[in-house]
Image 1 (cartoon, rainbow, N blue to C red):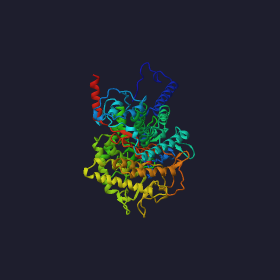
Image 2: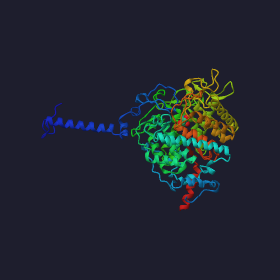
Image 3: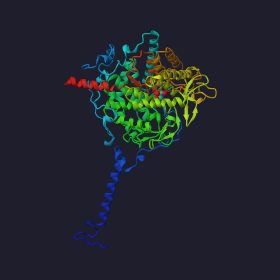
Length: 640
Ligand code: DMJ
């Protein structure tokens, strides 16, 4: 084909010389390179990246070895990230008489003096990721009004701290309660002295531990302790903790964190602190942090991955050791309580939407023998392995089903159905009786039973107990009995050791009855689960043995775990010449000591009629939707 020369246009085109054309092209290509560079390297370019990259490139899946380390400890980080291991809540009172707080509510108000929330708190709607991710409140039962702390308070059946702060009449019980308070003060003072601002105290070496479970977040022991200090009336300590949160809790960390751990400890701790005190600071931090967790849900199924970068990139990974890039049941199944409250406080439905999506998938998927395996692919939404456990990797998923139901003021029927059918499957497949007559929960590996029970599984006594009232009426006593039997077995795992503290895992085979047979299972890291069950069983039955068992644990902790500068875990519960692990876990302050304190307190301190405890023992209030709406209506009528 012949091109005719256009009049007035030179042979070199647009009247440019060859060298000029070359310089122009060079400039153009430089400009293009610059634009693309900015697109890929600026921190906020993630959304644009999505246009160019496939999802998997944005959210790399780390395929790991599938080792079965306790997910709670998060010992292993994605191998290819080069990470090392880590252990691991005036105005006109409109309330009806029936809901009127008893006299000692003043005690609560005194505590809150100067720190109470305003009558109406204005919450800015949190950012959502994209328009498509926005959902209307009504889609998920989230209320659309801004949250009012006053309304919330009026909907409680009892003052949070009870009459007289839960002080028991019985002098001996009160003495024991005071002892636990002293332990908390001791643990806290040493943390403050040697590890302030770090995540945990190393009591032997008298320094702080940071670890890598919380990304760049710091002060895990502080956030985990806020509510414990507050309910114990350790107000100077609580105020120090609050001040630290205000001035030093930096949420703009760029590190890679466990979604589960950050949620249960930080989000849970901040939410509880807000609901107990009405300090807006805690609410704002909780919502801010909650927002940072959302990118973990950007997977094909909406099942979040276990590890998230808290920085602006929001990338997420699966644990390097989790089979085939899978997500862990106990991790993605332990977000519901906190996320529903994040929606409650922010009026942003996205949090509830995310966890309801998890619920939907789990409800639909086929379950082997009605059981929930521990590993699920966030990509395909299929189970990856058939390992089922009520201990590590599975545990708090079951706990959050029954607690979701209770926290919804018994409105969340799906949670209820899922909980009771899971419990039936557990009873049919996992619950065993030992030759010595001890009831235990075995683990299930594709149909084969492993006759082992982890310390972590000992929370199930309490869980089955609090769910006893809401299953089939004819099964109430059965569930209470089962709860008592499991709690008894866990107590046996303590009494059969030299230190009277329980091992990490105990077995029922090769002649063993509730004892550890492997050296590697003999340690005790200040875990709460056995004491947690004592506390629930005490509240449910008032059988004095539970308080006695709790006192045994206090004495054992004092004797074997208390060191000069704090409390430490021990490496072998079967020898009294103990070797300490040099770690005061933050859950010791958050859970172990709180459950002990509650065990020796009256039942109206954080009454189970008003509160559910998240899996890190942070109390979250039951959401009385009808009362809150009623209060809202009454308030509007009055202000007209
Ligand atoms: C805590 O962080 C939580 O209770 C979690 O659900 C499981 N275990 C540890 C303490 O053992």
